[in-house]
Image (cartoon, rainbow, N blue to C red; front, side, top):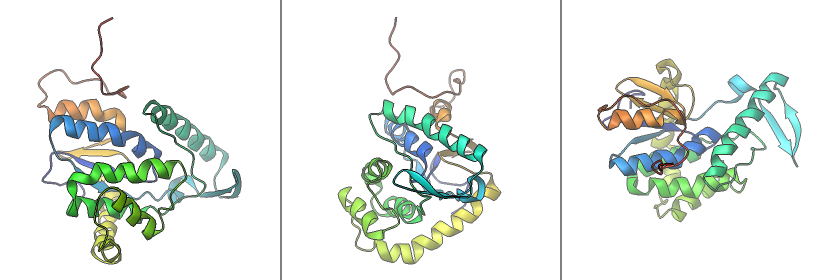
Length: 230
């Protein structure tokens, strides 16, 4: 697997522990469905401490932190920004109390892509909303297996996949991402073009529909409904 190449017309990189990926999941799935095109969904497991420092909370209070004041300011704004869009979708986003290793939950994306592709949206619904309500320990493989089963996906050989082929695929892909120019999620890739952020979805739609009209502005879509006349 090469970071910028796919047989699908669009690659989508996401991470279960990213609030901005959470914001983008439903709109991106809706675009995939409306176009009748299967995207190539892939995991990008963010190494947050490498650029934003690390922190841990207990009962709502910070008990460990290596972050600067400016890093905390940026993180707090990021959560407020993502929360605005999540709440428009009728969901809840609570800041995490530690930096999670999301690799197991992310490897499950590859598992679903390879074993039961049509249920990928069901897996996202089983894992994303409860994780952001602080209801899931995504570092526990049994918890991720339960999410797969809840989504109607067979998890019988998932643990072996995580221990072997799945982990090897995941780690090999992660090593390619930064050198390829992919740094965050959601990231959309087509024809060598890399677009970071859900605000590019209107442009992605325009591209996938054949670029027949003037390119749209780069902006968040409020929802999937067509605008109504005043």
